[in-house]
Length: 239
Image 1 (cartoon, rainbow, N blue to C red):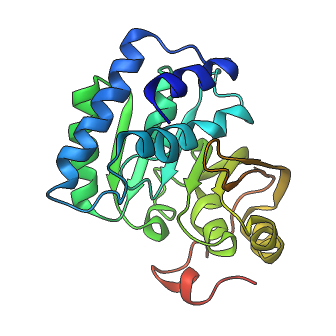
Image 2 (cartoon, rainbow, N blue to C red):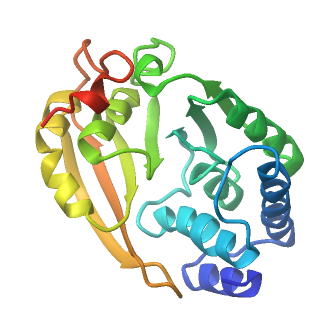
């Protein structure tokens, strides 16, 4: 996806990028490639691949969820900033928070945020399991978002504790998402009364790979025991 295709396809979805926003995406790409030479951030370094599989793919969540209102977002396991930083560039008013377990990645994100001139963005170095038990963050966010972090039964335990009651969890998944969602029914119920609002599926342009945007409403507070100790959700998922 060229930069021109990227801009045009977003316009078709009602997202008009200013010259400043286009410059921010260009700087994002250049910073990502530069830092990727000294630490492993992404396997994709070709410009067209980054614009399609990282930038456009991240922003696709906004095709199915309204980010135009003021809200606080926490991105669990964002890696090199996906999906929350591309969403933040498109919707600058958002309060964006990122938690990631690798301090080197947090260092990159802090540098990236300064380079792009982003405001109201906060980064936390922590495991999602311990972060979800932190009273300063537990049940505090309007929206929790995660992209390609873990299977749905595991992800439910990592994400739902951070969402406000009646808040939203957005899971961005690829092929096999419907099966994962079926496996996650018990975890959704136990960890926060998670109700699936919609499972939107589409094909990523050009390469036509499967994508799912799963939107879940949290209907009740998370029991105190969740999330469990680091590593436990992955080893013993609630199924």
